[in-house]
Image 1 (cartoon, one colour):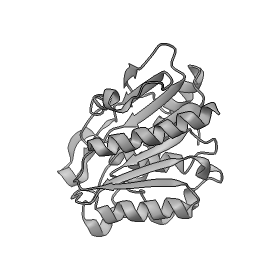
Image 2: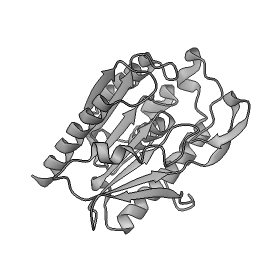
Image 3: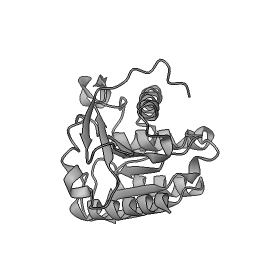
Image 4: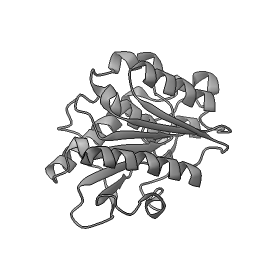
Length: 233
């Protein structure tokens, strides 16, 4: 997918050390902005990790149909919030636009000296959906994908969009069992689909709703520790 015309999104940027050698690109959920997950950095990062550049982009402001057309930050429009329409709730054109914008940020990181194999793409809820949509289209694998409390958008078309080789990207998925926004079953089905496509998925579930918990942050830190250790071998 070409990203030549995709505008670069404004981002909140945090460094964990001088001259970062890895980037964590983290996409927020609907109605939030890039500041939403900045507080996770000190809880997640561990001694001995390489210097990281955390990028938290702000999604564009757009009308959201299911919220009465209210304008807010979102990676795509949501037409229908009903559970029966879960996998078709995402505006597909909006998803692809966001994928292109994420790809533009990944390309900029390469220009700044951090290649795709040292970029971790993460997202929560809507941001996680864009993470999965981006990851399954990648012909050059990223270091890893993180998808929290989310689902595969347009699941019925996902296999057609899958790029051979994308399955080489390690994938961490987690979900709350009592999530009232993105039902737990949607996370399970999305995990199963990614596994069918060949992804090695680390799947975690927690007794929570549509949120992130400390146990989840610890598990994610363990997973990232493995990524960094594998890259240095």
